[in-house]
Length: 367
Image (tube, rainbow, N blue to C red; front, side, top):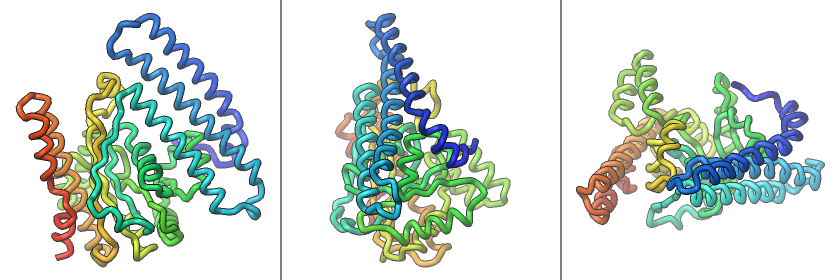
């Protein structure tokens, strides 16, 4: 469902949201108190954990709306605002909100993030970056945005679905930062917006994009294969079938960004650990989660990217095939470790030799 028009959101929903969120947050706190009394000795205490997290999320979201309103009252005239200060204040609001939320998720749900970086990370400093991330599991987008902001000190320029405008806090803060909300049926407008977004990037900016277009689930993967087959795209359908851990990537947004900025370096982000949590029931059963969200990323310098739209589409398909292979290796090692067949250090050795090095990621296209 499409969100209401901007005027309705700003004039009606946003002013009411802090009060509504406060009432809902108190209701979840009451649920948490009842669950603590009724089941004090339950080991997992799922109701207590989720109720506390939902209460905190609602409070943080309301605080985002209030914080953005305070910034607007301080800088009411757009013609008199310093764009750098305006952006920096909203970045701080978003970064603090995500850091608090993820810290709470770690304490309440066991959610943890481990990052494996390329060895030559310093080559990307002070250069704009296009981040192409796999999308799978609950909370992965929040974790990736927070990682870009806190760990790498990047301003995230996020490409996201328009449905997230239903979240008042995220709607306001991301609407004031360079973002691109995707609406179905507006391909030309989106392409133009992404080209402009890339063209106007600062050296510390990072465009965060999820080329799959949605969160991976087994059902979506099956439907993607059926859709490609029905459209007569047999090669793409075969590629999708051979890469069961990812959805087929869409190249339109990637090509638009690379068109807007010829010196744009690209980072490809793979992660695993959360993809089995594809429904409310599976999330409920898994809490507190035992496996971390493991992130591994590698990069392609702008000078090494292939030229031409067709070759860049092939390059993107190759990167997603590598992401799929890496996830396969991780899942196999994790499953073996759970069954007790492979010691933890041996399972780690398997994943240390997975097919992700830059030279492998580049050579089939560049050669």
